[in-house]
Amino acid sequence: MNKIKFIALFVICLLLIISCTNQEKPISSEKGLPEPPLKKVVVQKEIMHTIQILGDNECKQKTNAALTLLSTIPADYQKVISYINIIDCKETSSGMYPWEISPRFVVGKQTYTHHPIWYAGVIVHDACHSRQYSDYLAQHPGQSVPHNVFTGSAAEQECLLEQYETLTTLQAPTEYTLYLKEQMKTNYWEKPLHERWW
Image (cartoon, rainbow, N blue to C red; front, side, top):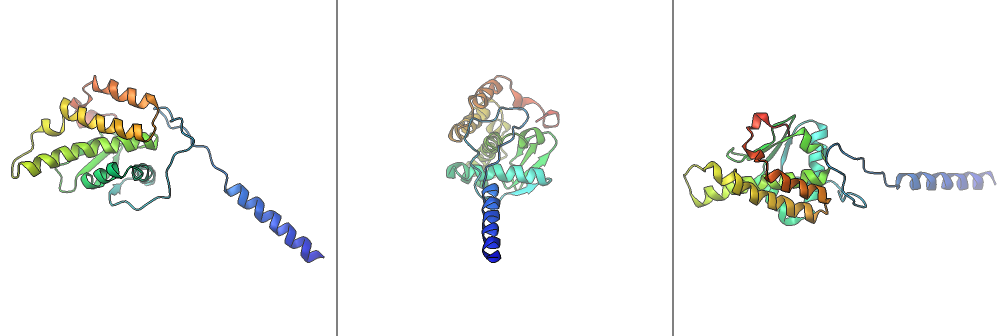
């Protein structure tokens, strides 16, 4: 009889443990941009990415989450892994360095600590600049790439549109897309890299 009670108690404890570990945890809000009104963030099981991530554990975790989210949009993900080889997390001074042998996206803490959807959109944006640079080189072998090919108003319009499309596909809140439209009016791209707070 004691054996039956012990087994029953063991099964009840096991069921309690299983039910506690399967509960969803709420997603905490990040500073800055509002959290999207999603049922839950769709960051599936982390996958191995071909992009080298330089930075501390927080940077690596947030970058992997954004890349995993992007992997749900195959065309965007392919673009990112084709045109960015390194993501380098820094305190400030976000920018794309497409002329390096391994194109490097430097991302500031204000950006990589935002919500994964926002960060994913920013990664697509900078992959766009790297593609612009690479496309020019492919079409003009041996020539140097003029700055206005991958930076400036026209280049930014194109990359902001790609970022907007990614955010829309990921069901980002309207505040994110409105913010992009406002940024276009600021000529933020003219700010020297060393003066960028983001």
